[in-house]
Image (cartoon, rainbow, N blue to C red):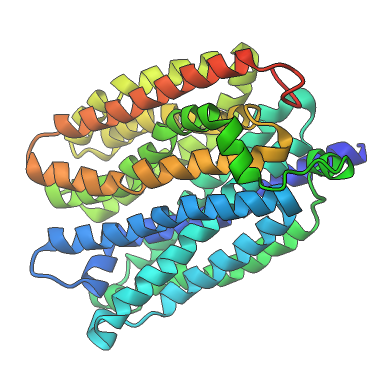
Length: 432
């Protein structure tokens, strides 16, 4: 094994493990927002109002992400990818463990939700800086013709983190309700401190990206990368942001909003939906690498167009099967949608990377991804909760909402594919 191939695999593994920990932290907040944060920090006589308040704090993390994308994109294109990844992991670990230590509204009054919002904002900053660096470390260490597959390992951290978060909450929700509300929900947050130490130890052993080191050696790093990428690549940013819409918002629709929908509006047991989502996420975890391999065979652009169009039609059978309340049928319905949208999510990272020149990549992909996460990802549970309340007993408005998000992705993929075809080899390090 050559040193290059060893570093390629180590970089992919570090991206996977690092994003797993980051998304674990992010998803335990999402799960807690659906299950417990409302009554603990925003007590109300109306459960819907408490849930909406909790989802509003969930959205706060997404507000922070574009700002973090700007800051860390600038620093990552100026100073390197590795330094940013070490810092973002420490930031996330501290913020998440801090949430587990917060007093409740009953103990601290208004200071409790204020502290929750502040720490949630810090979580958003961490993820906003993390994603771009992890994708680039995996992609820029990869062999030239395997960039899509290697970049997909950074995306694999999302289902892995969700699996860990669902296991953690499945364990603590088995406690008595009073114990769960008092201290049980805190344990998954406190575990983040230990995971952070593991992630840091792994990431320290990975070299800086060879493509970035080449830019440094040529002394061609951008002085103001964010300004340059917005000026020169604004079309790529907009189309890349649109392309990833269902890959971001779709997960929070199926994995966050769906918990509230089936428990509050369908009367399905909390344990049933958590078990369903766990099985679905296992399928997602197994299918994402296969999606990346298939995309390399048939062409990434063609693959992304196919799966984004499939996402337009799949929410309708999904809701029909969810309505049954049968765990097997619910799993099949949600899995159809999740496996398809996760195919887009697995492949879009590497596809986006190659739309930007190396010297501006961290800024370009971070701005695109974090922009749509803020606009669509963070607001999806809120919009879903409002639609479910406004059209009580009707699932078609929710399915239509999912279809619209998918259609935005198709338009983005088509536009990004056209821009990539117009690019010359001199403008990009690697074009396919």
